[in-house]
Length: 94
Image (cartoon, rainbow, N blue to C red; front, side):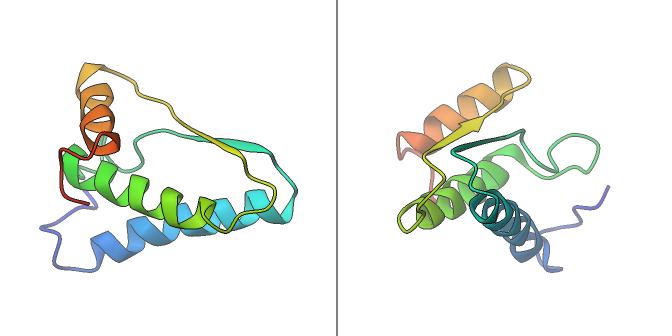
């Protein structure tokens, strides 16, 4: 797995993935973008930590975005769905 223990730059790398993707969407005038739970499958990123990063980065970006108006988190399974729900409702630290 790419995820080792969260102390080898993994959080910043994952955050950068969201930021750069959102920047590209904005640059191309996209009104919406969808993300899966990036790195949570075979790469082994813990779902709760990954969703906290995803939500934090998306919220920060959307606060100043001009084109991007909708972001969808595509959840492939109950575990991902519950993690995103908890994070979006503020019951997990982000």
